[in-house]
Length: 449
Figure: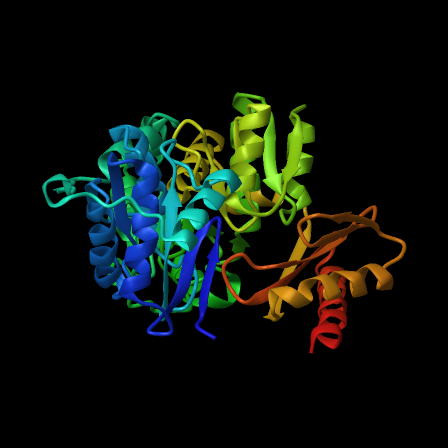
């Protein structure tokens, strides 16, 4: 079977094995049909396969009469900002996020500058499945406008969130690992604008990843070594489309993705209390922080669209996911690594402390994540096996299965972006979290193998 994953959230696949120009044209034509001949923003991460997909996307959009606003290489959150800034009818980000280099994909955006919700996603799939594309006549085809300085509106929105002068006064030393992704376009500009002394790893957005692209500890040994060697205050690591951020403290310790949202919540809620939304796979640390600031806390299903929908329904002032994705409505309803970097630097300037001290002051939990190959059809069997094995836990179904005890939890669910099943466990101590995760993985493996 072709390695192609199609859902309401978009499309991912392996180039030459399911992801081909003909299918890309059809997908873009479906989005163009929904955009009804209006403006559509197109951007891409730095992968070498990006230009091929970009041309196919543009062809599909032009065939439906849309005007393509081509941003070139830009991050996923920048795409969302541009849609809102230009009042476009939608957008497409060409990216496979953290997937390996042979993968690429398409992430559709609504006219609100956010990823598709279920209603919009189902509508796109209906058009795609039915080949019911709008088809412009020769004299009504769309046109292409090339955007210059496409990063600028995004930069300006981020700068409005923080005390830039206070950061400049401290002049923090930062190591930024762009890993040859689209974060290399705005990331260095943002940090230099804030007066940082910046050291860039993988600063050319050409998709030639120097390490496995998912920003987890095992893949960031180079960043963890560089931060203390260079005497830096903080290390930041982005995924290829720069919507996720992992953090390393001044000693080279991997603070991780999970604490990215917790750190930002601690900074934001102390100044502007309000509701916070996270997904069901996110650490309890953010919930504890919200409670400490007297703020409402809500959980959604996993997936950016679910988090955004919940944020809007409760008028949340901040949201995100434990994969390092922070969503700041004042910039856009998209996960945004640049917002996260700005908030962390802003709080460090205000506290005049080291990052490690701040991180250690937050609620402490150990979270462990694992995955194994599994078809989506077997996920239900895995959930049933775990539920039978852990009868003392409180189950929560609907997004895979989450099992809660008083001081720990474990979750199993299908990935929306890869043909795998994810197992996540959290406990107060590292060994307890590792043990719970390993035990759950073994139960799942015996069930689905």
